[in-house]
Length: 442
Image (cartoon, rainbow, N blue to C red; front, side, top):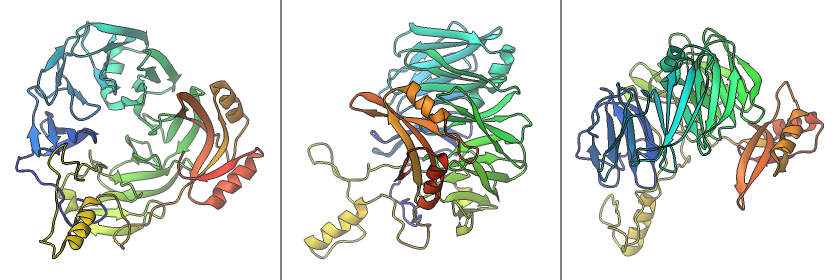
């Protein structure tokens, strides 16, 4: 359905889909969505062909995919299988039973396990059977501490794989297979989630009523976010504006990443799909069998979707419904009724092709403007750290983000985003440093 309308179906398949437990990955290039059904078995939905297929692998401990096409399943015996749309299934048994797998953009696979008091990480390149690189390091506790929480606290962003290991948060550079981070938290790690850029990690500890913020560049805890109660699970807004934390019972804490503070508490069941932050910032929550859309800052109710909680929700951006050149494949056409003339036909097709988000009616909130304060944009990471180290406003230190420019890495020292330009300007002036303000998130 084209959000925010939610009143028309854009795609339908004649294949039956089993109840979904969670979505693993979606590849916009080929239109593959990898998911796990309620029985724990992986499946693949092909949005171009309208097919649903289930790899031959049985249910496993963990499923990973980068593009929705190649699906890796970690079996109970610690071995790994891969399934691709073209077949040619691949399997791999590491030297020791694996406890987590991370599919990478370059087609390689990062595998993690534990032996004695050490974590072991391997890299393989399917369909090869050779371990191309390996890494091991002390986890400061028994292997059960890693095995028990690895699948729940692990993730992969960009070129870094991160996970909680006993009382530590560890990150590994997947390209060089080198340890990039090892921060001792002091208490067992319950959940870890990264911002979309991977610049900051938010860590929930067992029975601790605060989140710790770990900075990727300073490699230390740089802040705390006080919560009404301990967080049991964390969920990041795909666009990095909000962080959702599961509290006790059916409470959810909504945290603004612009101010690193709790901006409200809402009621909602915590499921694999909900609560969910939509691209326009609206937060989808549950109330009985209904889904409520809440405003991202005021948390006021915007709309109730009757019976929506009985469905599985997932938001994705894809332009695969747009017609392509005739020489590539058969163009997709959507038409409500036969148009009266060629001019009207063009108008109908153009309207149907436009599946981008629009907020022109009262069913959804207007886009939320954001403003970021930038203090420096340099090519040297150490220089960026020096600049960030001498700035603190309202108890918050800047973070460092990265981007590629002409093949070089640019390091930006930023604070925000903030909801208004006035607030961003106030922070910039309070820093006592040279700055500039731009619209958008860093």
